Amino acid sequence: MGWERVAHGVRWVMVLPVLGLLLGSFYFAFHALLEAVKGLSRGLEAALPALVGAVDLALLSAVFLIFGLGLFELFIHKLDLPLDNVLLVKSLADLKAKLGQVIVMILVVKFFEKALAFQPKEALDFFLFAGGVALLAGALWVSARE
Image (cartoon, rainbow, N blue to C red):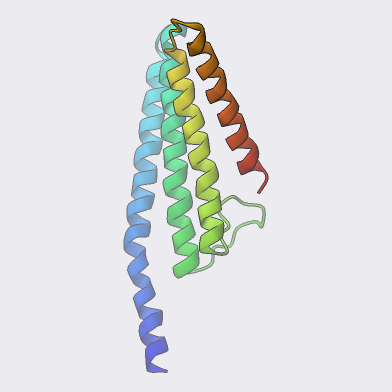
């Protein structure tokens, strides 16, 4: 009985990383908002890279939010959320799968940022670019199968 009480109390240590992750989520969400406002105040050509950067920051915010609330739900207390909610986490494997999907989306956005600045010089450049697009499509297909 004594060890159970100690284990029950020690789990509250996880509140520290959860709070840090939630603060990080708010930080990235706020900067995504600033980036979007900055992008919308520019012309059309300059707005796209800024808005893509805002999407990247929003996805980082989502990673921190999913991981923070997932740790909270696993260690502290179950969250009362709808069953189809993205924040519902039943195990560490479930949390890892959700994070993997968001990380793939971040990589897609990063690839899109690089594609905006793409300046092909040879035919091989087009071939490699097409290969990158195919790999991203495959990664999205694999992550969507879950």
